Image (tube, rainbow, N blue to C red; front, side, top):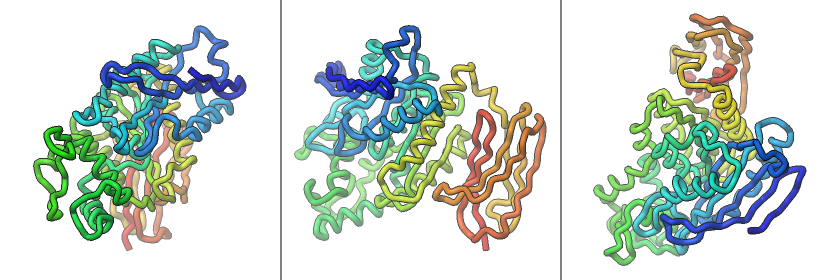
Length: 407
């Protein structure tokens, strides 16, 4: 175990442990608050961070440092961050699922990693002190694990993932065809799309009786194989979310670049629509940019996690949420919208309208409103036609709605 100690900032441990479910030793980076060893009685909340495809536990060091900058600036509570190795060469990664080919990486994260962390560090073992996050492949892994194991995680941060795969299948097929010289005979080394596609086959449709050891999602004629597609959908958060309910108390932070080169931004919009449909707590934080993670978005993600943890410290539960219902109409709209809502008790209310990239273009502070019914009208006639995001911010709750401005 190697230690990088900075008493003013953080302590980094390069650790490893034997995983029972994978039957091998796996590496893990542990980041502790700089004064961790000075406070024997403190039990810390934990963020489990999952890296993207082609990476390992050493990646995303900048996001760990960002967390401790915010902690040292007293913007958020002290956290421990745990970054496990989810790689499985020669493929680009495990996708953090149980696979006959890669091993049981879902169980590795949900069982062995949590047990290792909680047995060796001063950790608050409550669900309200446990969070999971990730970028790209890691964002998808975090989403899946939070849905499979709502008893374990209070909140999840998903950055730059493809949560509704059906919306991107045609684009993937087209790019694979080009990357493989106008052919559907796939060569793992043909390029990024092919490597990601084959890695997905190993994760979602392994078949050890074949060589290579998986069933292809796309046949040599370019057709989707229906029974394989059904297997892939079992791992698709857009389908999986139907097995969760708001009573499971999992909150979602979804962020993605509007110009993501994998063309997954519409997939994120669709997933957020699903979260709204099923009334899950969530924040959608788009940003201008591509697939690379966005620092400002992750600062908001850490604030989101910290707010959930603070609510847990005050024994916050589902029934204590301030807003009981919300209606935004008409939507789509031309000039004016009406926002009708009911508050259970007095709280501050701020109304924001943002561009789809997350930039705020209007803020209306309502101040402290009493419990009961309220109606606020906004004249947005000066806005150009397009899609906007409406945020209603209260002390312990944020409600997000998508607005469509017509001509």
